[in-house]
Image (cartoon, rainbow, N blue to C red):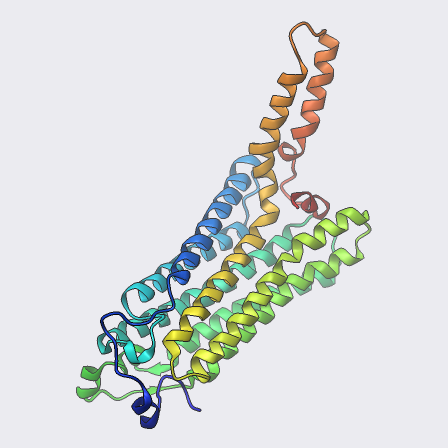
Length: 350
């Protein structure tokens, strides 16, 4: 079959009568996932920036790219919800009111921009974080990190350019589905979206996989206790959840554009996995930086309470000194963290 965007007449003739009153929908799951996952990312990135700026005083370029990704990811969620609530995402294509087709396509185009830039930004943030680690890493690792950064910059530029040039004029991407625009005699040419979009998904997954495997190879060669190595593996392996979500998203994207004549129905599920993939990446990128935040707000107050319980009235000054030392031992690790994060310390966040 050709692109799902242009079904042949015999397929259109086989569709049931449109239902504009109470059409079947995919349900509210997409909206809930957009709100839930984006809220979690917003909290964790806020905690990350608080810790880096006010606790460890170590705000870096990786934090900036994480913020950019969060802003774009939030914008993506908002666009998806608007398309879902107002313009037919999650409906059968035969139930789509013709006046919704053009704004829906415009929202899809804008959403793809947000995804490409947000996905690239969070992977660049992760790779910049690797550069902050203070271990004397081999030159090969530093080169590999830069290769990953350049790959993601190239991905963003390449598919950003593809989105901008896929149709000439550019507004034909959405206006080609407007009967009035066609009646006005507008001419246009569009590239093969059924090839470029699945390819963008596949290359994004490659970037996810690269960013995940890179530190695991490094940890494998570090001389660390087994427990600490396991903690580091667990932390960095969070990226494999992103890879899995990205693979599912790419498969569904190919279904939407190449394997169905009912693309808006399948688009609902594809957007779910897009939101999951992007926000899991933000969570994985923020996890190492959250250690200081939780130590500051959880361990330190617990240590203070422990101190008050263990030092009743009437204890000697020597006993109070012992209790004070015990309390300090419980909370000192977060306050004395170096600006450059040591890879051995990252495992304590798990």
